[in-house]
Image (cartoon, rainbow, N blue to C red; front, side, top):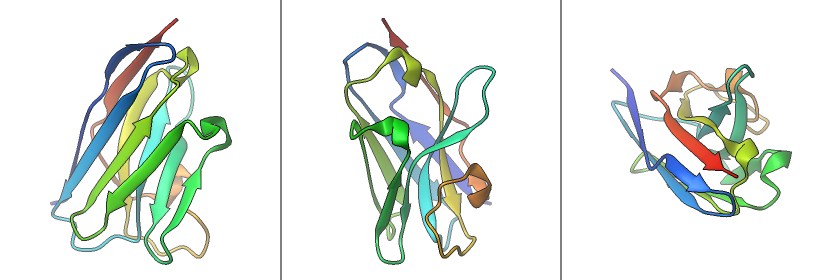
Length: 125
């Protein structure tokens, strides 16, 4: 049984910061871990991910250098430091892990096969 548990969400004013954390248990190996978000009425979108082979990082265009992903494959942890938050960043943020090998970066929600329950991030204007 694989479990991904997120923490660190909450309510913050525009321009503020939050740090999301995720730890996976029962996951013997993964090719990637990352963060995916879903705003009300919208589809899920990958925010950022780490591909462990080659330590390749992917960030969505809307991140614009504001968010930093980090993690430890051995500990099965992944973090997302979010700075300069905007109201448009309001969403449920999901930790995700992938046991699917891909040549390219993990930039699509369909790249991931294990999910956390999600943590709400709300940015007020």
